[in-house]
Image (cartoon, rainbow, N blue to C red; front, side):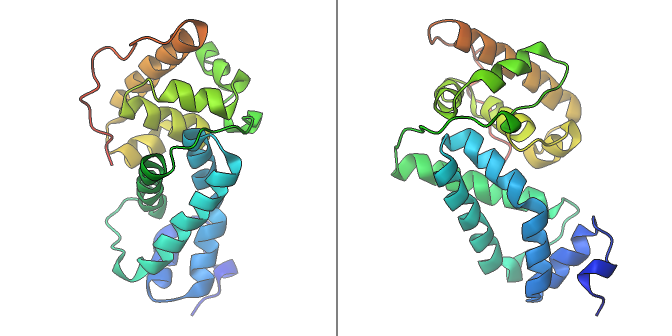
Length: 200
């Protein structure tokens, strides 16, 4: 069996299949590849770096426990991890109900050309969590995936199970909502699309 250092860095499918077969080294490589993005996604959603680290670790523990049943269906292993993380975040808010307090690291936010995105860098994790609760679930997901986890538009579309154009439009509406929520008193700025599913 080829050693990890001999495998292409992005040969995720081969690593996933090896991890499924109980290869601890392959699972460790997947952990190293993806932990940071999973952590940043969760931190954006829960607002606490300590809780995010715990939930990210739980994400990989659950992935390890379920690795034998993992099926590669063309989507990256990371997509599966985000679905596990998403479910843990839902459970976190259902069971914990704690308020986030840690400051938002500037590296969690994107520094792209859209000036609306810059508003994220000036918020604490507590403020991010508060603002996100006033958005639709798809808006929360696109903000956390794009600006928390740092996924590309294509990667975000794959994780959410949506077309890239739809994700781009959703990101635009989410950033506009974010800017309005930060600038003024809390109010409904979701455009009435709260019935949308999360795509998970």
